[in-house]
Length: 250
Image (cartoon, rainbow, N blue to C red; front, side, top):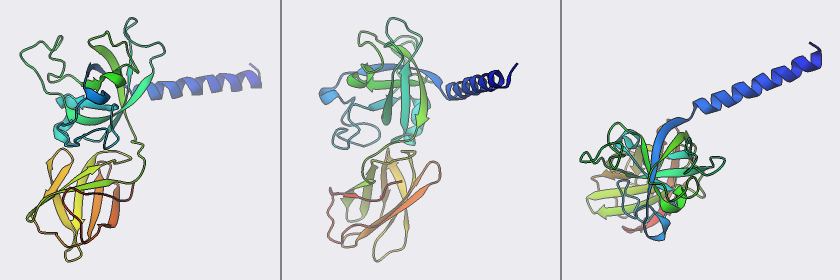
């Protein structure tokens, strides 16, 4: 075998190994869709995001079965999903779509996990918007086999902090999180306080029982991979409940 042939064989083997490594990243699951107004899967969900179009997740959002939802810690995480192994329902070439975890798909143990109880434990299942589902499969399908993998979240602009609560119950909803997408820990700091750890209330709503009115606010956010970003003086001293402020991005 000549030097050129040896080099070509090496490149072919290298390419094949690379494909195998990438394919190993994919895991098997199933997917269905739910038709909602404005192409969103839902406007109020278990992650607490509210209007998904307003926070820019929109149609590319999904409800996850309990195996994937992980009691809400997966909220904001991003998944690449593609329809596979179904000649009638999967679109040609198995195109993929990037989804954000925004809701919980509850189990229905009154129905078989093979028909109707698609989110029953221990199934891994995505409940998508109709518009997102149509990007990977025929809408005539009721359920399709898919493969998925975790991917980095690509976001425009910085982290968004939406403040709610009252004088002695302070809560912040954190959205538009890049990188992992999942928030693991949050701290808040007023001009008259040190850094105060916040507890997860539900979804991506974080709380602490302290009066922060009249103080400019800073936030320290840590993702599930351990990356931390600090946004100083995000909210001015005259912030009001219901307002949203933008900080740094990962």
